[in-house]
Length: 357
Image (cartoon, rainbow, N blue to C red; front, top):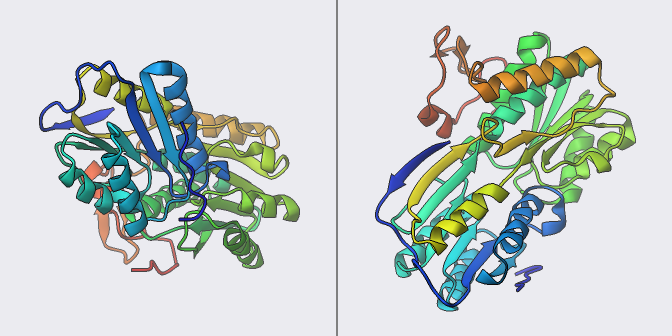
């Protein structure tokens, strides 16, 4: 495994309480990351949560992490190793860790697992996710306003519902303020690969994009945008320092309070398998400081969109909305259910790209 290091809302309940009510030994907690903690994006932000756990609980916890762990067999071997080594709680923080987490959890019923962005649960496996699409609606709103070419580029990872949902949310918000905007989408089939992400950003610029949105983990797209003098948005963490002129805002994933809460639950014996999906209203999703380089009225309207989503007066998926093929998905005034969003596998009408299957 490359780069491995081990170092010292809406909630649905399932099953019985799991975990020790008390112990004289420190609670042993592990975090598994799909990319490096230095990506300044997805993995970096999860690791900020790990550090807050250590700061909050001190000697009462023994916390370790592994970075750049490939999804699949490598991750399953590492989870097994951790369980055999006496870990009490293991956070697995990428969609592709879902089946390995379930497989290992079934063999170690006394170990608590928490899986991020998946949908499979067990008595000793909870799942948690953030409503990233809410933040993407804000970035789409801004992109629709600031584009001059009416071409917005989008760097996507894998065609899973989380990513498709984000593209649709951004596109709908952009089209709402700019009916002429179009999205160009490049699928890179990786969460973290800066050279590939940079190539995708350059390809989008060649296609006329003057704004870049991304659902990848590195800062490569921002660096390319900075070089070409166009707008771009960060992903998962505040990436403003990497594009002082190009960066407008970032969608920030704030996992830290959740990690502290779940560790505390295991420590006091109240942990239960839950399904958590929170967003702007609770702060699990945040929108970083919006650049003053964009027009003041655009910044003000973006903040109004953010606040309306947070207080529930605006849902990013409110009809009328058709599927890409023109068939009705949501009638006028109807909002998408969580079930519809979690399984979203189609583009909305107006996106001319082909969705990979």
